[in-house]
Image 1 (cartoon, rainbow, N blue to C red):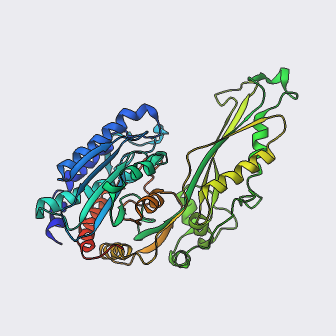
Image 2 (cartoon, one colour):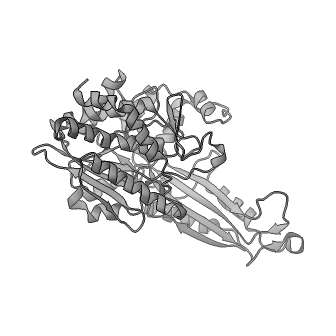
Length: 460
């Protein structure tokens, strides 16, 4: 263990307290009511970067929430690494299901429980602390480091690409290291090399111009609720496959290495359904089938259905409108524009008579991402993880979406390597999110080992 690692571990308890302060800020980006808290979190990040010894620290406004940038670029001849993270968090709802308040961080059984602890405040604080330790111990960093922490990742990164385009010269680098993006399992070191893309939309069916008495108008007035149910049922076939014409157009075959990883994963289907609290289907799917569905196949999911009266008791009403929210996870070769056009055409073709259909798209969406298998920084991160965990990491895909890979590739012409120390079981986006303090410690050591190794390699 080198001197920087020793310094980081000696002050570990202090770092945990700082993480608790960070997690106590309710920086919920999707809800306008939290806007002041999002700005407070941006100031926290900026202040922490400045105290770490980073330079040109600045809070950059966007049309939405601000981003925080910083740098230290005094290593001539060494590569320049852009560190990405985000300081915003998901809403804490339903709050009543939390064991402890979501923004009152609490440590239980070696875990820090708080909204944002795992996604992404714990992992994103790590590179700041590591940079500080190098600057304090050596007076310099092994590589040139730039930081970009955004405040809109949890609501779609709507303004990230415009920001990166506007600040392209300032953010120019050889490679991106993302502190966001979890490992797959706590018992298996993994590195994410692919993620699915994203498209979100919602629809509404309108019947009468107002809610109507179900006795006076029942049987004659249009009811958007059953009409919506019939329309949504056309989106999938009996086997649950997406039945939208044109939805699958352009899909390219997956990397064979991901198929190999699926076969080598030791994934337990029975344990998976038990872990999510769902009844095991019969017949039980194979591990390969489940992981292909999670990593390599596109989805069209219903995220919410609204309409009519949902309160206690009854209300005899025919609602004026009913709606649904839809999200799609896209795989390599799918274009968000073409997928949206296919879904819109399908919905209009199958829209029930007597109701007016409205469709709204949320943002441009993002295509799937895949890191080149021979990227040299990928090999370096795998070497560090192998040392930390005593076994070679498995290359895996991510069923979720992190749009940054495509943004940095398009605008800056560089690739993104994920180097996060959260794990997918830490209930981010759900009640009782937590971050293992052991993984916080591993992350500090991992980043401290990786930066010097980057100094001797061209990220390419």
